[in-house]
Length: 271
Image (cartoon, rainbow, N blue to C red; front, side, top):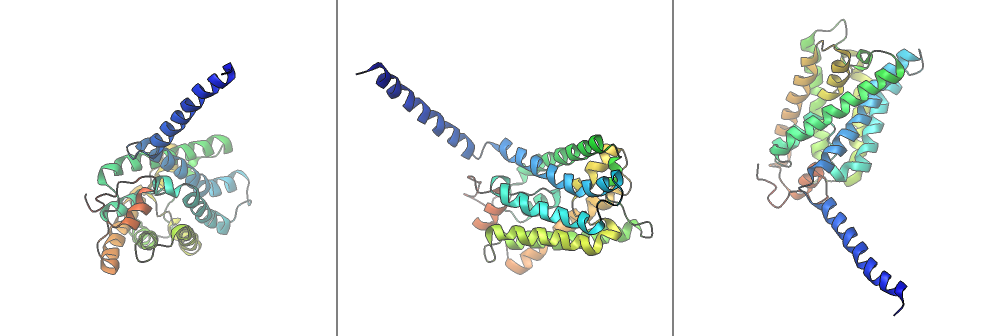
């Protein structure tokens, strides 16, 4: 037998073993870090677009209109769900993580990690925009209109998030699961809500989308509105899903909430 043949026979099994090891590691549900990176990465791009629209318009006056600024996040959400939804579920929003947990489609023990990753992604995007555009991240935040009260803004954010999370939970349910096309419904809702409601609150519907620019700029004015409103709206959406579809915890809801790379769905209804 030739030396080259001996080398091939010894190297090929090693390569196969290495590939199998990497695949096993990637599919291991204990490798939560992959999902956390996906959440931080996806939230970074969502906030990059959502906060970047008004900040870009401030840096280059009249370059980004209101319609473009509110439609862009919807399109970005759609793209993110399509490219990484199978990894982490593409929550990108603490309100979504909490709603999935309330539905028992997502383990509560994993919620703090997801929320932390989402905040890190939002902070990174706000800091990046502030550095490269040389304008305050405050311009990319969400604030109630000058003619509106915090309580009115809270109610609007609550109702907007009720609708958003209802769409998310609905497209993730067993009876109405429509797979990747759910991204179109969710992204469309984000854009639609922004088109008519952004003058009042900015149509944030996402605590970290507001907290990211606010923390980077050191301005947390009315931030409670954008934390409490979406979280209350998410809880109401979970309750409405119970009324419309019964308890969560089914296979399709768990796959949507956790991603489909070996999610923990052997006992999906276990808290």
